[in-house]
Length: 367
Image (cartoon, rainbow, N blue to C red; front, side):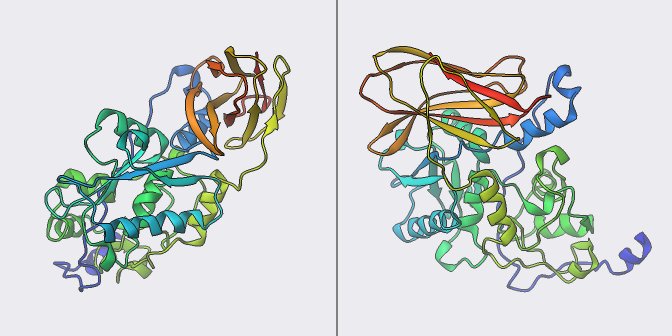
């Protein structure tokens, strides 16, 4: 099989104009290392890796555009990004997206530059975005490096897919792609990408850890898929002549988004000192409304041999504002938050189950 593939391997890839476009340069996040206790249960490790980049459903993700300096975003480019946010929201997901005027209020900070570094990329998922925003406050968490008004490959929506937690589709371990590796190196080392060898490996050739991937199929039409010219893909053979995704959200993209971010349900009214128990599967979430009868410090916590993420918001004029959160994933404890709640105000606690443990039962209480 290898000899036949080599006979089809061209000496040099000369892509047509439709492929000669720069591509996103966002390598997959590193695979988290677990304790021996977690590693003893492969299903637990996989569940944690699958969910660690997922936002709590119902979250309002605030975004901000650089308006001056190197990363200043022209208004026509900002409008294309707004349209991409609307495209994801139109799927029916339970997240909200809100543009804010102050950088300090934004989780997602968007920049644009046609100068070096001339590239489009984004931090991946909840953990990646929040970490980047905290560590590099003067640098975009999401960056665009070419004219989005002339772009037909869906770059604006692609980078926001990274924000939501999606990674590059061709790096799925289930894709079954076999590369003409030297042709891949030669092509991406040249214009318009001009990538070094490490960037080519981390963005094209490297496969994701199987525990990071939901499902078992490759979607060549995904908004997260690159376009590849003829001569790079050896198998599946139908893509030897190139792969050009449509540049729109595919059905699989939409299914993924709705799985992790389903339409929001009305929260359950929580009562102090009353435990509420649930049978949940990995990724499922339940929301609680809390209206404290007095102003004081309260403790909110989960119970059960599960891994879970617990996040507390205040309802401010109908919009949730983040107050605190705790993630006990991979640790032998329960998620817990202690915070002063004020009488007359309304709060929302969101519990997302990461791994159900041996029973699948978890409970929530505040006191």
